[in-house]
Length: 309
Image (cartoon, rainbow, N blue to C red):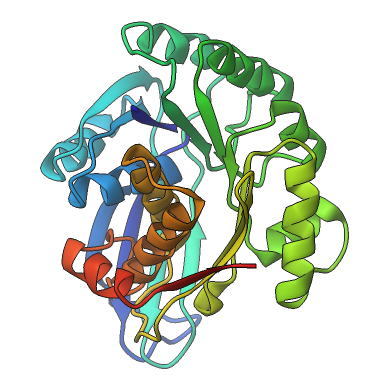
């Protein structure tokens, strides 16, 4: 089983620290991390660090793409790239000792629907039958949802299993695609279903409703309370151990990585959920968007409990 992640809208994730942040004044910031990011890249990095073979396909801007590609190489990632005119966007997260973090996101390069054709051409040499392909993050401006659904439909006809984790999709869009896996949180599933989802029972009912609409695996992240999964094998809930979280940024992407890693190894639904929660929890034990470390994943995995309900 091959795992391929698509990142059409990458970003540099820049984390900086300002002591005693003072609004409306000049502040001296220290850059603590500058990572190649984007949800697909985050998934691939989590897999790579944990020794799981995968391939990332990333769209780069010609103005700063070389720097981005160098970071992918430095992280040991296997990747294919397409280059368009423009600049990869930057996300700046400002951390301070006396207030909540502040995030500033810049706009990046423009693209159009021809990029989807270019992606298909780039994948022509890859065996797609039985592979898992992730489509995550915001759909770039200039690409219609109709074109995205046609693109994903083409991949499915080639035998690929599709993973969607994107707020650009409505519930109707997701039902049309019928992906193999989605991973909404409580807020996102509330939007999908048009009703407030509060607590475990509501989330479980929402996951069942989505599964009944043709989505094979519906995993809902519940933050520190773990996650639940509704699949053809039944309904499962996973509880992680308590940890001291350093950063939750990218934890959802890492949890998808864990789910895919378990699927690649032939695990059942309970095993996929357990490793997903292990990856996601371990990711919270690293700073910024750094991936979950193998020793942390192993330690957490031994303490995660999964039960069928």
